[in-house]
Figure 1: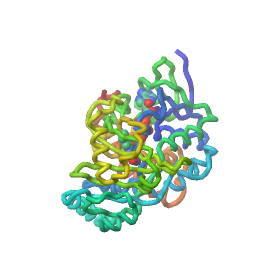
Figure 2: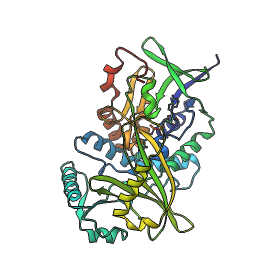
Figure 3: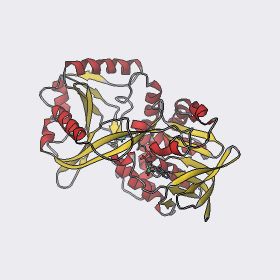
Figure 4: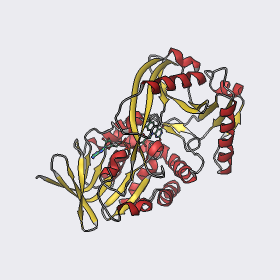
Length: 396
Ligand SMILES: Cc1cc2nc3c(=O)[nH]c(=O)nc-3n(C[C@H](O)[C@H](O)[C@H](O)COP(=O)(O)OP(=O)(O)OC[C@H]3O[C@@H](n4cnc5c(N)ncnc54)[C@H](O)[C@@H]3O)c2cc1C
């Protein structure tokens, strides 16, 4: 059995794990990332909405606070990442253009108004506008839409571009090992490393568990579950594609269209999503899901009928029992960065600030302090301490 010693061992190389790895490298640590297929988890499917407002549902005030705190960090996070990766400004596709929310029929409008009331009670900015005003903002809005709202504070980024930038930012350090971790290594009550599938042992001062929905199979105190979802990628002529994020409900079913920047050939990629299921992770796209997403998005944006269907992709969000992230120390030597569920892209910037603090780097400015405080309050892994008081191993 060979062995490897490092300061920080990160298990999982999705957007969360690579963010932790990048922050650790920046803090001067020696780092290893274990992942058999980095970037091919939920991050590969994500649309990239940065939407603390429209994602704030009933009973989710804590998550709204986490999301708002994270969004405030995104511009500086994107800029620092692009610089570290040697990429030009704008390379990760952060766009702060706001979001249009649509209600297809009268019942959808009733539900939208209830949500707007909730937002107003929580101090989140969203306001009802008439369908005609929605068409001024986005000419492609269909003729049958019953109502709309403008959400100035919900934005977007390109998760695949962020993953590429994170990979570039750590590339020179050659930290990536394309193997799965099979177990954590314990000494008394502390985690001191992990074992990979080839039998290599890693000894580390800190292990960051960021294996997405599979985290729970390595540590019962990270009780994650897969929440599979499908997104579609379309290519649409620029005059038929939305220029801002358009999301809505069609007879109670949620759907969204997230545009990427205009390409040299005059088209935009538009990400349409997303389904959400409670079943095993199998990466398989159901025909009915593709049908339902296209049926509903064309009800809101009929111009997308002419778009080319480029790709369907199904991956699993890392859900937790209360659907809030699991971010913080769970044992000596074990830091959890998982359970980001449907807002992991949004919460990446907050995760970076929390990891910085865990590695002894003081939060840089009031927004980072607020993010770290929100993480401690609403994402503390110790809320699941009962799950591992009798067992340290995995749940699966
Ligand atoms: C359809 C869909 C749409 C979404 N849209 C949005 C959105 O618009 N906005 C938003 O904020 N969020 C969105 N999300 C959620 C977001 O994608 C996730 O919360 C986020 O990607 C989680 O990142 P992660 O790195 O924790 O997990 P993942 O990206 O799943 O990465 C986990 C990594 O761990 C690796 N791994 C697993 N087991 C092991 C092991 N034993 N050893 C080593 N490595 C292992 C995997 O190979 C994988 O690379 C969406 C998710 C889905 C599925």
